[in-house]
Length: 113
Image 1 (cartoon, rainbow, N blue to C red):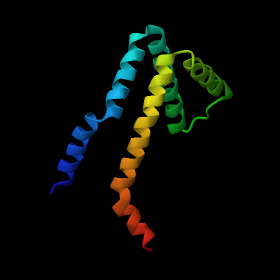
Image 2: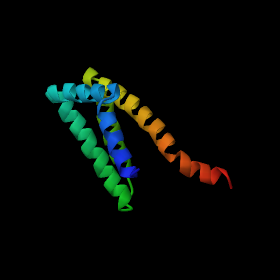
Image 3: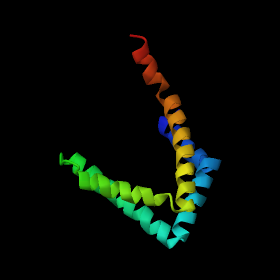
Image 4: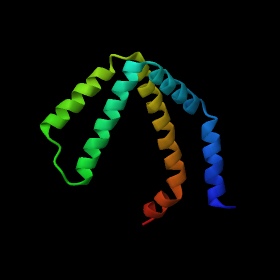
């Protein structure tokens, strides 16, 4: 058996899950609300900007943190974004569980020290 065949099958199986379907619908609802989508995009861009700063060893300023907090506070004004975040949490929980399963052989190696 080829491990990559198993990975590709898992990818196909993931596409059929309720979690992925619900996440897709939630994201489509965000995109359908122009104001919500623009805010969502701003938050993502700000997150990327802050990650880039961190990776380059630059300090994240109090102004950066304040700007990010202000943007994320605005997210709660949109039920579409709240729903998307809920669906993302469900998806992340499933991915965490899958990661534990997939990583089990490696974890066992270190447990047997």
